[in-house]
Length: 506
Image (cartoon, rainbow, N blue to C red; front, side):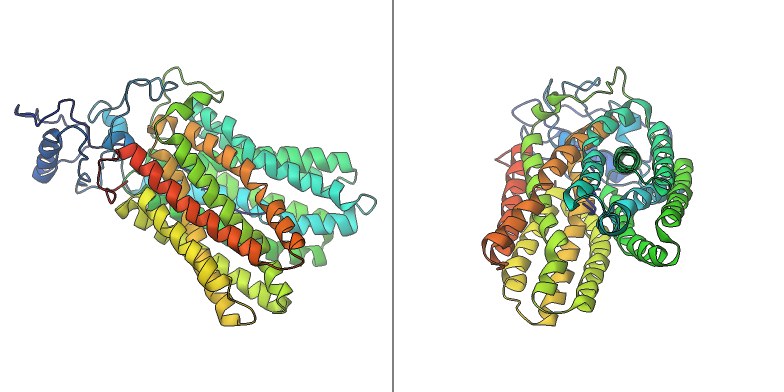
């Protein structure tokens, strides 16, 4: 599989639920200033108003100081988790001011944006390799492993994809425990060494171990920490920062296939692999110098997965919504080019449609993340999922021979699917504290990715079963997006409370 899921992951809180049934008449204490924090009169007034909220009420968005030092404003701040809601957390239930380091984020500045750039470089390397898997599969079947059937060759690509996705459930807790340095270093070494070995391998088992196992491990080690590290520096602007970093997936989807196709003709398989190894090493070295974590690791943090994250309020529903969203998104990404060819538009136009889709996706990742910061990531997910569903039923389904309609759908779908990539990590981050971000994001990303792997064969069976008709595939995509919007709305209300106003920011 050669698609970006970036997921992009994930991801504290400002506001609190009043412990009493009515408004408190006691004057609230003045908040203590932590070194380097910024608080003006408006921010103090906001704190006072937050203290006077009644039970079950939702606090307003916290104000941002002159230096963009923000306080946490995720779901755990809107409604603090009950004791035991994060049983795997070494921290007590968070409350405003209880941890100045975690409650105050830089929200910008040179150091923070250098981390974003480092994450972009790491994602460019890991997702770039993933974006040329289809090309590798074709070349290996035709030139390199001609004595093996297509299913055997495809097993290398499938194992690589599965490991790239599923190992995140282990990499996330390692990031929380030890920070990003060792995962990023390990991922860089694995990716470079694997591609060098692949360049000199002719035996199937050598390719399986080097390419599938070690490249898959390298991609997983690079991907999860690069997303999670952004959450250490951004909270109020996390959607925008994550969106900027995940544009690496759209750029690599254009750059890597072009490089590979040209080099295969000019220098052949061995030197193409070595060239890719050098490119991945170069950008990964930059990521090693730039990606940092801001907070010390959680005390007594574990490096093994835990099913107890499912006890977190809203986790299961959010997981289901993200699964439906990614399931729906993978179908057009995998079959749109084939659909264009089947409708007789031609090879050149199919490339144009994919290019338009990738360009729209890059724009959607930034714009979607920015909008999510303002209206709330759950609200933004509902909006974009509805728009994607409308695009399927009102634009893609009626298209037969009109190129304008096909380009229009590529623009709409590219924008909405791109926004999904940048919003998914930020949405997950609303369920946990920053020191648990890696664990939660890695768990969601792994489970969702495993489920999404079945989207391609299911959609393919629909086309074959309907004797070449694509209507069933399109309807499946539109229904899945609509169901995703509904589940996102239910997940949000389960977190903020059913008595809250539906448009509350979350």
